[in-house]
Image (spheres, rainbow, N blue to C red):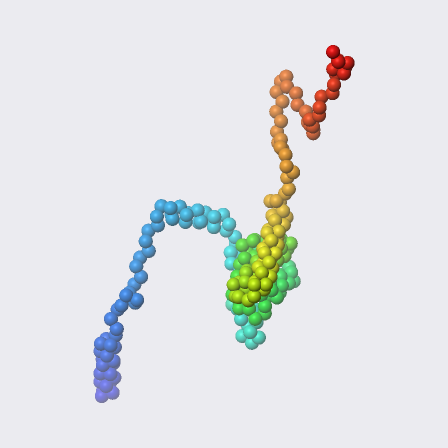
Length: 237
């Protein structure tokens, strides 16, 4: 009985102490204010963004997750994700269902960023490939090249800001400019491969010709040539 009474007194005392010593609520610990309402312009912007996201919706909308290997310290696929989900994500990122091709592309990207790079760097690069949405193995390889080129270009641009001699800064900037031109060329190549950049020769293209009763039409190439001189013109007055 005495032990129970002692415990009760100890509990009551600790509650009183904690109540007396508890700091008064401050502005930093108060509840955050409610969100403000959107303006009409912001509401229109959000609706347009939502429609775009809905139009670009994919079954797999997240790249494969990577984590650090507990023993080697390298990068590895997240073992907590189901294998079927990993396969679907890798297919969406690389554009191919071939496991060997998928591993080759992942190895290439890992070689670009370095084996000691954080797992989040590789996650970001695969997210960029997913945004390109390769539809087959060739587009997957081109997407990997584009992401690697972008990574190298931005790295060179960052090195320009880190200092060094004028000659070194100029060299780095020129290298970045070449990589950015290469990236633009890769974009054009992807567009042409997808049929969006077919070259059309300059000129006027007629899609439909309507010939009504009493009219005439010429089908073919028409060139303007000087009119031949008549016999009367050749003879003179």
